[in-house]
Image (tube, rainbow, N blue to C red; front, top):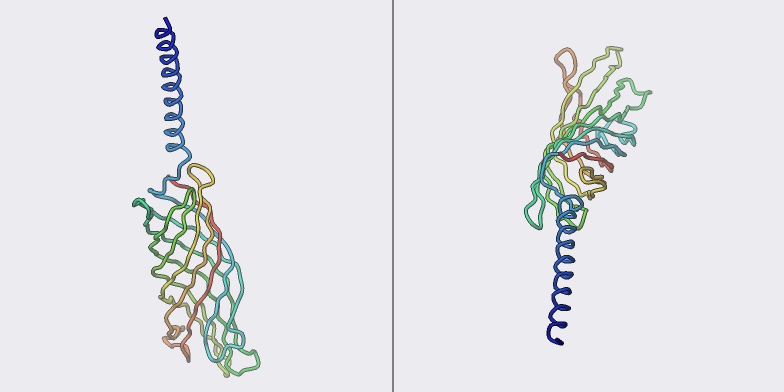
Length: 220
């Protein structure tokens, strides 16, 4: 009788333990499917922030500009265990303005209007967050207006190629939504700008900028 009672109690404990284990496994599976971050896949988003731009040229009185920038990005990630790798492209609107001394006989003004990048990203996931480094190709557009001492005005637009590199952090706030904060440095080539009439600017221009921006992405 004593043995039968103990056997019955052990059986009931075993059944309860099995039920508890099954519930725990169901919860873990649900957490893996719903709450755990899945970095692999395509994403699209928007971003904006501050842009500190310099347009190096000997005659410019004020060659630095602080302004806002905003744009959109599209990318793809693939999870490789402890590392996440991917590629991202973005397009940005800017409105940095520069000008020479108005008292000079030859006066010019410039404006950086747009930029874009194609970058690789490599990051380390930590919980719902991803800490990453990024680097790649960058381009920007510079508009130039030039007025000679004789009153002749010419204008032109040219694209500058360069590199971009930086660091960032991204984290899930919803199963398919992440937010990010990143700092990027843009360094472009130095060259003359083509002007109307088949002419070129009298000197080379060398743009560069530092951008700190926040963004939000939707993951498919």
